[in-house]
Image (cartoon, rainbow over all chains, first blue to last red; front, side, top):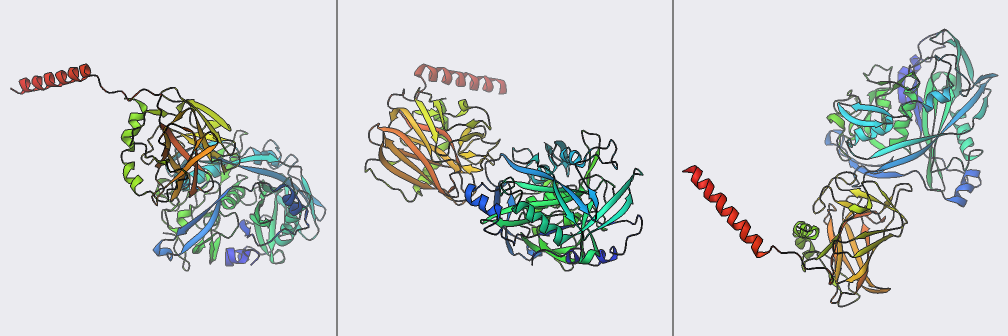
Length: 392
Length: 236
């Protein structure tokens, strides 16, 4: 399976939201994943670069866990970005993270995250909103009553899920910005919408597969070398979301994907900044979801016991280690996002994420902070095998 | 109490581990494994002088033993780290002791192990060895190769328990001709990623282990007797 279908991810709920949009009907934002099944062609610029340079890949560790008896007791093997939390040596692992603005034109309407954004107080550029967000800047984090230190959000989450508070274990996303890349789509749609501050805005919609093909073509072509298996490129769109099934299944706010280059894993993640806000306020809810998932499920198919009927997975089961999906906001499952005021005065929202112990019912990699199963207290027990799914 | 005596005390339990050592190899019939306790070391080299936790080490570094022997360390991978047990090296398992400074053969910029680790003695020694633990959990086999100049005197191997708790790996010769030891590791630390604690050695030029003077013992004994008499009088 090339990727998980949005229909599988969200079941009937997506169809309910797929009706033709009225002027300001509420929208639901989803996440998706592109598992690493594709291989960069040998004659592609990226394969040729890697054959010549052999860059060191992003560090990952492999794990093997036995799920709890209630979750079937099976043995599961996967990989996670960073150092093994069970290693004796605790230190900082740095992930070069490249922020790539995408200037997208859909049927003549351009969405440019490098320009001042009239939908946001002070009119900052979207690229600056992201670069100054808690994804990349340090804030003090208390998760389930435990002090995770002053650090980035994803690092705090990793420290919390592995019970590493008080240690020098860190996973730091070292942000850099690459030149904007222009993409033009003639098959998408543009929907005029009004931002919360009254400014006129627009929501662009592009077919998921068409968009992902364009992203992978960028990585394997013009960005080859600058982007390599030792870097993690993230692609920023302004208010451009993705659709499936001819545009009737909407809206994917972000996804993470991977493919193989010379046997090494190249991870990447496109996401939309939602400045309307048209879906979720706080700019980085989707990004925090994707970053948490890309770090913990870099190949997109780390297997887990079957879970589901929770978060954005409505009326369906799922079997991969996607730490954001069970707590995606807006689907009826209680979730408890973090709200942080950044140094730029903007208020950011970061999605609550599920610990590995929720998926496996295991403490094999450490006990989650506060004895909980998600980073802000929502999951007090582990998953219930699906069907029926849900959580303890 | 001198530093090496502390280590003798905490290493006493390692005699049991030494008994279960497997795979000992001897290229030189005279070279044998050393467990760090018998014969007792008379010199030790702490790594505390290399800097605080997290200090980056270059391809070479130096330290001085308590008896004044100059120790030159070198890392095949070009760099390493100082790790303090209980700070960046956790959990702490005996015989490692919280607060001990360790040499960690790891480069976190490249996320790679940097062993083998060579420890060269300014003055040749009769025996030398270190406590060692793999970074990754699980069974490992440590190896020490002793050299007299460029000539290999032999290789000693010792395997940890299944959990990968620290062990002492050392070698001793019949004459004080060991000018360096090369520490490496297989198993859980096959990626050249491990840490070593204080270097112990038998250095013929080091002073013998200090023993309490008779006068000191007599003073201590009389103090204890006086204390006991005082307590007896108070009870009455």
